[in-house]
Image 1 (tube, rainbow, N blue to C red):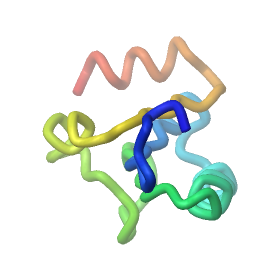
Image 2: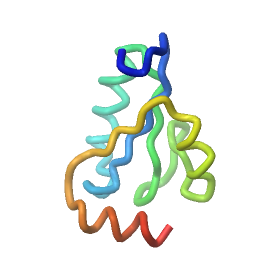
Image 3: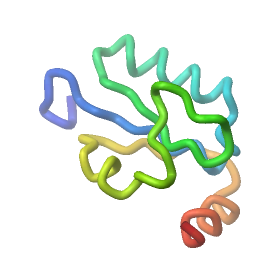
Amino acid sequence: RLTGKARPRICYLATPSGDLPAHLDKFHAAYGSMGCKTSHLAFFRQPDSRSILVSDFRPRLLEQDAIYVGGGNTRSALAVWREW
């Protein structure tokens, strides 16, 4: 609702938890069931049809209505993001 969109685009940054598959699946299930168009940024796992590729992340993240950053190791995530 915060986006003001009927079907908002939301991207999950699961980098702090190492892109754990269980976290990705829960995110897509939860937000997909609310009518969101979901995606995630794939740093550590093999990309799938819901992934935003690291090589194309800048324009794809700017297209999102919301970005959800998951919990985990913040220091590690910041190091990865700075590198890219």
